Image (cartoon, rainbow, N blue to C red; front, top):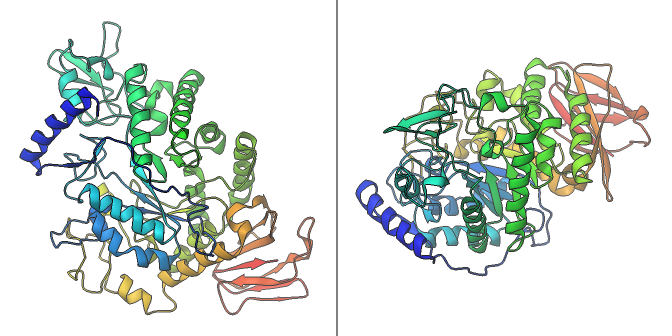
Length: 532
């Protein structure tokens, strides 16, 4: 442990002893646990689904009765997650923080004491890996908390940490709007610092080599502890600070250079680490450059289109968007199956709420998501149909384990606002063969059986019927046609004209009424089929 790191940890220990009880920190020395990644961690004679599951630890499962979700709670639910079929977990921030959400970190090397201990985290990693489940953690390094010892020290212009943050000068426009449409500059005494999100989240200065070195060291630290990769919070905002910089190619280049340096730095520890970036842009073309240094970036434009298509019962631009996305990402990476599609996350209204509670539209959104190649991400409770609308606290509510929302292991960090009844719970849905939970499990199971659903090259199969959306997927082992009837009426699809291949056998079907006879695929309302 370096001298300055030891000093910072002592400062943090004192602060959290007052605020939350002393935080738990790992010893800052490398260990050598076994590493796995999402495609190889399932080493028990079974195929990985490639599906990741996002968890807000505070809301997921409570192991000690204090009402707050914790790491041991997640460990206790690993068999549930295994039965669902996911092959990876994304844990929202697990570090010490003064906030409920954790995106303002005060110790990058510690564990939030409300969530458990360093030993608890190691136990979670070990038990997840035993079940073939990878674990990635949120890496929130665009900014720190304003309560971080670095920033508290940095307020002094003579501090060694002053240049770890960005400060105004005589030429600064203190009225500038940030890239997130908030004030960019915040006063502290007679100084102003940059905070793209809020004044509680001062931006770190990546033009300072010491900051870059520290964050590479941080990445290596957690990989040494056994994590399988990272979700990079605000990945585009390392240099994209002001609204006026949105389409500046110099800003993009600086972002890509930094993340390339980071990737090179962590490759020394774990070259197969899965690193997925949050890059909220409007097109695949804008997101694609981040695939150079990163494993993937979340597909925000596709998420919007999937929900729009499910809600309208029309394919709309979905097929063309999928083709553009495949082309853009393959151009950068040279391969297929690299996307990170999703429907919603912790910053957006829950899918069921976006779909106005329509259960059939929810199923179609899920079916489209889970028949796309790459690593689809689902948000905890999505598989149950949990609802939730902003403000943010209401889309991060307790996971519904039992019909009785006061049952064992239910978290109580906040009261429910969405009005979901007892049927929206794991207990209720596990015993109902027609539940959304069992539907998700089935769809994820398809991915484990059909390699093209995970890794295949995608090509849109345009349809004259706007209520049908279809695409072909092929890899070295399989070639399939995916067909979705988005509508509430039965449809017939002629599959004899699929380009370059004859599809003649029904491999998977979401509804028992789906048939394929002499090239005519009969599809009941709101149904999905895989044809080979």
